[in-house]
Image (cartoon, rainbow, N blue to C red; front, side, top):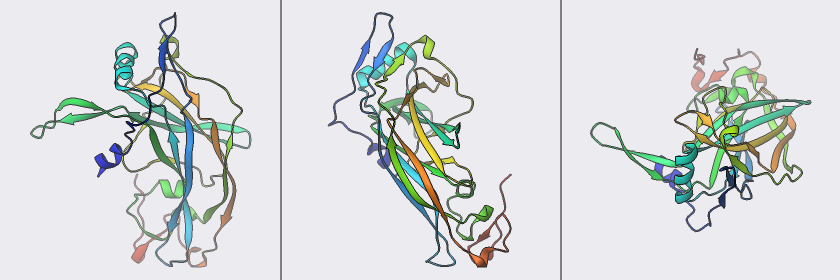
Amino acid sequence: MRLILILLLLTSCISATKVSKNKFNHYLISSEDLELDSFRVIDWMLFNSKKTVLHQGFQVKLNLPLISNSDLKKLGQARGVDSYIVRVGHQIRGASYIMGHMEIPFYRYTRSLRDKKVTGRKFIGVKKTYFQINYRAASLIPRSIHFECPPLFHRLKIGEIKSKAFPPSGQGFILGPLSEKRIPSDPLKFIAQSAIFKGQRSLLGIYYFELAFYDSSRKMVVSNFVRVPDYIEVLREDSVKMLECDNQDQGGKIYRGKPFKWIR
Protein backbone atom coordinates (compact mmCIF):
# COMPACT_ATOMS: atom_id res chain seq x y z
CA MET A 1 0.00 0.00 0.00
CA ARG A 2 2.84 2.40 0.86
CA LEU A 3 4.44 1.80 -2.54
CA ILE A 4 1.14 2.37 -4.36
CA LEU A 5 0.60 5.70 -2.64
CA ILE A 6 4.15 6.84 -3.35
CA LEU A 7 3.79 5.90 -7.00
CA LEU A 8 0.81 8.24 -7.22
CA LEU A 9 3.41 11.01 -7.05
CA LEU A 10 4.72 10.05 -10.49
CA THR A 11 3.92 12.68 -13.07
CA SER A 12 5.49 11.58 -16.31
CA CYS A 13 3.06 13.62 -18.40
CA ILE A 14 4.27 16.92 -16.88
CA SER A 15 7.35 18.67 -18.26
CA ALA A 16 10.38 18.84 -16.00
CA THR A 17 11.61 21.99 -14.29
CA LYS A 18 14.44 23.90 -15.98
CA VAL A 19 17.93 23.29 -14.55
CA SER A 20 20.89 25.41 -15.73
CA LYS A 21 24.41 26.38 -14.69
CA ASN A 22 26.00 29.81 -14.34
CA LYS A 23 29.60 30.93 -14.91
CA PHE A 24 30.46 30.19 -11.27
CA ASN A 25 29.44 26.51 -11.71
CA HIS A 26 26.40 27.04 -9.51
CA TYR A 27 23.26 25.17 -10.54
CA LEU A 28 20.17 27.35 -10.99
CA ILE A 29 16.73 25.74 -10.72
CA SER A 30 13.39 27.44 -11.30
CA SER A 31 10.88 27.54 -8.43
CA GLU A 32 7.99 28.48 -10.71
CA ASP A 33 6.11 25.21 -10.00
CA LEU A 34 6.45 25.48 -6.22
CA GLU A 35 3.02 26.31 -4.80
CA LEU A 36 0.38 25.50 -2.22
CA ASP A 37 -1.95 22.93 -3.77
CA SER A 38 -4.62 22.66 -1.07
CA PHE A 39 -5.31 22.28 2.64
CA ARG A 40 -8.08 20.76 4.74
CA VAL A 41 -9.02 20.50 8.40
CA ILE A 42 -8.73 17.02 9.97
CA ASP A 43 -11.66 15.98 12.18
CA TRP A 44 -11.16 14.17 15.49
CA MET A 45 -14.24 12.04 16.11
CA LEU A 46 -14.56 10.93 19.73
CA PHE A 47 -16.09 7.59 20.64
CA ASN A 48 -18.40 8.72 23.42
CA SER A 49 -20.75 10.44 21.00
CA LYS A 50 -20.94 10.69 17.21
CA LYS A 51 -21.90 14.32 17.63
CA THR A 52 -18.69 15.27 19.43
CA VAL A 53 -16.16 16.35 16.82
CA LEU A 54 -12.97 18.22 17.61
CA HIS A 55 -10.08 18.87 15.23
CA GLN A 56 -6.71 17.12 15.15
CA GLY A 57 -5.22 19.90 13.03
CA PHE A 58 -4.97 20.44 9.28
CA GLN A 59 -3.32 18.77 6.29
CA VAL A 60 -1.23 20.68 3.74
CA LYS A 61 -0.49 19.61 0.15
CA LEU A 62 2.28 21.24 -1.88
CA ASN A 63 3.15 21.13 -5.58
CA LEU A 64 6.90 20.75 -6.09
CA PRO A 65 9.21 21.38 -9.06
CA LEU A 66 9.61 18.15 -11.04
CA ILE A 67 13.28 17.40 -11.70
CA SER A 68 14.13 15.00 -14.54
CA ASN A 69 16.14 11.86 -13.88
CA SER A 70 19.00 13.09 -16.09
CA ASP A 71 19.23 16.41 -14.22
CA LEU A 72 19.07 14.64 -10.87
CA LYS A 73 22.06 12.50 -11.86
CA LYS A 74 24.02 15.68 -12.57
CA LEU A 75 22.93 17.29 -9.30
CA GLY A 76 23.74 14.11 -7.41
CA GLN A 77 27.25 13.89 -8.82
CA ALA A 78 27.95 17.60 -8.32
CA ARG A 79 26.26 18.36 -4.98
CA GLY A 80 25.06 15.00 -3.58
CA VAL A 81 21.37 15.81 -4.17
CA ASP A 82 19.02 12.90 -3.46
CA SER A 83 16.03 14.56 -1.77
CA TYR A 84 13.96 17.64 -1.21
CA ILE A 85 13.61 19.00 2.31
CA VAL A 86 10.58 20.99 3.48
CA ARG A 87 10.85 23.48 6.34
CA VAL A 88 7.68 24.43 8.24
CA GLY A 89 7.49 27.66 10.23
CA HIS A 90 4.90 29.16 12.59
CA GLN A 91 4.42 32.85 13.34
CA ILE A 92 2.19 34.09 16.16
CA ARG A 93 2.03 37.52 17.81
CA GLY A 94 5.12 38.72 15.97
CA ALA A 95 7.28 35.77 17.06
CA SER A 96 8.40 33.14 14.55
CA TYR A 97 9.97 29.71 15.01
CA ILE A 98 10.74 26.60 12.93
CA MET A 99 8.44 23.66 13.69
CA GLY A 100 10.62 21.12 11.89
CA HIS A 101 11.73 19.63 8.58
CA MET A 102 10.58 16.78 6.32
CA GLU A 103 12.75 14.85 3.85
CA ILE A 104 11.23 13.81 0.49
CA PRO A 105 13.44 11.29 -1.38
CA PHE A 106 13.91 11.30 -5.15
CA TYR A 107 14.74 7.59 -5.14
CA ARG A 108 13.24 4.36 -3.83
CA TYR A 109 15.84 1.82 -2.72
CA THR A 110 15.44 -1.83 -3.78
CA ARG A 111 16.51 -4.64 -1.46
CA SER A 112 17.19 -8.36 -1.82
CA LEU A 113 14.49 -10.71 -0.51
CA ARG A 114 16.98 -12.88 1.35
CA ASP A 115 19.04 -10.49 3.47
CA LYS A 116 17.33 -7.13 2.82
CA LYS A 117 20.56 -5.56 1.58
CA VAL A 118 20.27 -2.56 -0.74
CA THR A 119 20.70 -3.72 -4.35
CA GLY A 120 19.94 -0.48 -6.20
CA ARG A 121 17.63 2.49 -6.39
CA LYS A 122 14.77 3.57 -8.61
CA PHE A 123 14.04 7.16 -9.64
CA ILE A 124 10.77 8.67 -8.41
CA GLY A 125 9.40 11.72 -10.22
CA VAL A 126 8.32 13.72 -7.16
CA LYS A 127 5.71 16.38 -7.95
CA LYS A 128 3.62 16.61 -4.76
CA THR A 129 3.94 16.12 -1.03
CA TYR A 130 1.67 16.38 1.99
CA PHE A 131 1.86 16.53 5.79
CA GLN A 132 -0.21 17.46 8.84
CA ILE A 133 0.14 20.18 11.45
CA ASN A 134 -1.61 18.89 14.55
CA TYR A 135 -2.66 20.23 17.91
CA ARG A 136 -0.22 19.08 20.58
CA ALA A 137 -2.85 16.76 22.10
CA ALA A 138 -3.32 14.95 18.77
CA SER A 139 0.39 14.74 17.94
CA LEU A 140 1.56 13.07 21.17
CA ILE A 141 -0.52 9.92 20.84
CA PRO A 142 -0.49 6.88 18.51
CA ARG A 143 -2.99 7.14 15.65
CA SER A 144 -4.60 3.86 16.71
CA ILE A 145 -5.71 5.19 20.12
CA HIS A 146 -9.44 6.07 20.32
CA PHE A 147 -10.55 8.52 22.97
CA GLU A 148 -13.76 9.35 24.78
CA CYS A 149 -12.05 12.35 26.35
CA PRO A 150 -8.94 13.77 24.61
CA PRO A 151 -5.65 14.34 26.46
CA LEU A 152 -4.32 17.73 27.59
CA PHE A 153 -7.92 18.93 28.04
CA HIS A 154 -8.14 19.49 24.28
CA ARG A 155 -11.50 21.08 23.37
CA LEU A 156 -10.72 23.06 20.21
CA LYS A 157 -11.94 23.19 16.62
CA ILE A 158 -10.54 25.39 13.87
CA GLY A 159 -13.25 27.97 13.24
CA GLU A 160 -11.64 29.92 10.38
CA ILE A 161 -8.62 29.05 8.25
CA LYS A 162 -7.48 30.71 5.01
CA SER A 163 -4.60 30.75 2.54
CA LYS A 164 -3.02 34.07 1.62
CA ALA A 165 -0.23 35.13 -0.73
CA PHE A 166 3.14 36.65 0.09
CA PRO A 167 4.39 39.46 -2.18
CA PRO A 168 6.09 37.92 -5.25
CA SER A 169 9.81 37.28 -4.73
CA GLY A 170 10.93 35.65 -8.00
CA GLN A 171 13.53 33.67 -6.07
CA GLY A 172 14.88 30.39 -7.46
CA PHE A 173 17.14 27.64 -6.13
CA ILE A 174 20.92 28.08 -6.17
CA LEU A 175 23.11 25.03 -5.55
CA GLY A 176 26.67 25.88 -4.61
CA PRO A 177 29.18 25.52 -1.74
CA LEU A 178 28.01 28.71 -0.04
CA SER A 179 24.46 27.34 0.20
CA GLU A 180 25.40 24.25 2.22
CA LYS A 181 24.20 24.07 5.81
CA ARG A 182 23.08 21.57 8.40
CA ILE A 183 19.72 21.52 10.12
CA PRO A 184 19.65 21.21 13.93
CA SER A 185 17.72 17.91 14.12
CA ASP A 186 16.86 14.88 12.01
CA PRO A 187 13.98 15.58 9.58
CA LEU A 188 10.74 13.67 9.45
CA LYS A 189 10.52 11.15 6.62
CA PHE A 190 7.88 11.40 3.89
CA ILE A 191 5.93 8.13 3.86
CA ALA A 192 2.50 7.06 2.65
CA GLN A 193 0.85 8.23 5.86
CA SER A 194 1.03 11.96 6.54
CA ALA A 195 4.05 13.09 8.54
CA ILE A 196 2.91 15.07 11.58
CA PHE A 197 4.38 18.35 12.76
CA LYS A 198 3.68 18.93 16.43
CA GLY A 199 1.89 22.21 17.08
CA GLN A 200 0.98 24.01 20.29
CA ARG A 201 -2.18 23.68 22.37
CA SER A 202 -3.57 26.41 20.11
CA LEU A 203 -2.92 26.50 16.35
CA LEU A 204 -3.71 30.19 15.86
CA GLY A 205 -1.26 32.03 13.67
CA ILE A 206 0.51 31.94 10.30
CA TYR A 207 2.14 28.81 8.85
CA TYR A 208 4.71 29.18 6.07
CA PHE A 209 6.62 26.57 4.09
CA GLU A 210 10.04 26.55 2.46
CA LEU A 211 11.78 24.07 0.15
CA ALA A 212 15.44 23.23 -0.50
CA PHE A 213 17.56 20.46 -2.01
CA TYR A 214 19.08 17.93 0.39
CA ASP A 215 21.91 15.37 0.59
CA SER A 216 20.58 12.77 3.04
CA SER A 217 23.86 10.81 3.24
CA ARG A 218 25.70 13.87 4.59
CA LYS A 219 22.57 15.27 6.28
CA MET A 220 23.29 18.53 4.49
CA VAL A 221 21.03 21.13 2.89
CA VAL A 222 22.75 21.96 -0.41
CA SER A 223 20.73 24.94 -1.68
CA ASN A 224 19.00 28.02 -0.40
CA PHE A 225 15.47 27.63 0.99
CA VAL A 226 12.78 29.02 -1.30
CA ARG A 227 9.50 30.08 0.27
CA VAL A 228 6.19 28.70 -0.99
CA PRO A 229 4.30 31.76 -2.38
CA ASP A 230 1.18 31.12 -0.24
CA TYR A 231 0.86 30.67 3.50
CA ILE A 232 -1.94 29.39 5.73
CA GLU A 233 -3.43 31.36 8.61
CA VAL A 234 -5.62 29.96 11.38
CA LEU A 235 -7.74 32.98 12.28
CA ARG A 236 -10.22 31.58 14.78
CA GLU A 237 -10.72 28.58 17.05
CA ASP A 238 -13.94 27.45 18.68
CA SER A 239 -14.16 25.67 22.02
CA VAL A 240 -16.45 22.64 22.44
CA LYS A 241 -18.10 22.01 25.82
CA MET A 242 -17.49 18.49 27.15
CA LEU A 243 -18.91 18.40 30.66
CA GLU A 244 -18.48 14.62 30.91
CA CYS A 245 -14.72 15.10 30.52
CA ASP A 246 -14.18 17.91 33.01
CA ASN A 247 -12.98 15.54 35.75
CA GLN A 248 -10.52 13.62 33.59
CA ASP A 249 -6.78 14.10 34.06
CA GLN A 250 -4.35 15.30 31.36
CA GLY A 251 -4.09 11.80 29.91
CA GLY A 252 -7.74 11.88 28.84
CA LYS A 253 -9.95 8.79 28.69
CA ILE A 254 -9.55 6.02 26.15
CA TYR A 255 -12.61 4.33 24.62
CA ARG A 256 -14.00 1.67 27.00
CA GLY A 257 -12.58 3.53 29.98
CA LYS A 258 -8.94 2.51 29.77
CA PRO A 259 -6.56 5.16 31.15
CA PHE A 260 -4.01 6.42 28.68
CA LYS A 261 -0.37 5.94 29.72
CA TRP A 262 2.05 8.57 28.46
CA ILE A 263 5.07 7.21 26.58
CA ARG A 264 8.24 8.45 28.24
